[in-house]
Length: 82
Image (cartoon, rainbow, N blue to C red; front, top):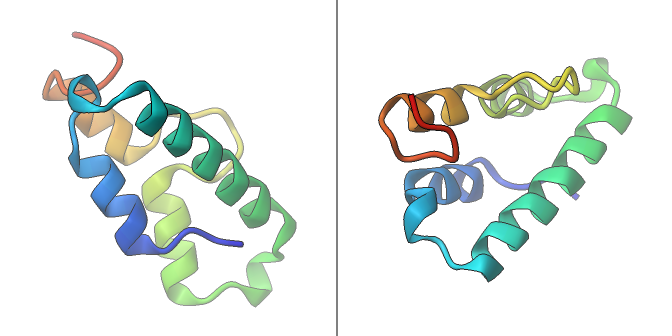
């Protein structure tokens, strides 16, 4: 089952440094499940919002950092510093 755009956005807005271990694990699990669902769904069957959400969250399965992660890291809110 795909994760809603609003769920992705709310998870992304909270700095990683303020998340509990359970929140980190939940985000990772939900992200992996959404990525798998995204990969299994043909592009031709995705809605415009699913395509936009996949692009925004980095669900291209190329192990690239998502736009959200790049932004959080640039602001010092993510896992990577610098």
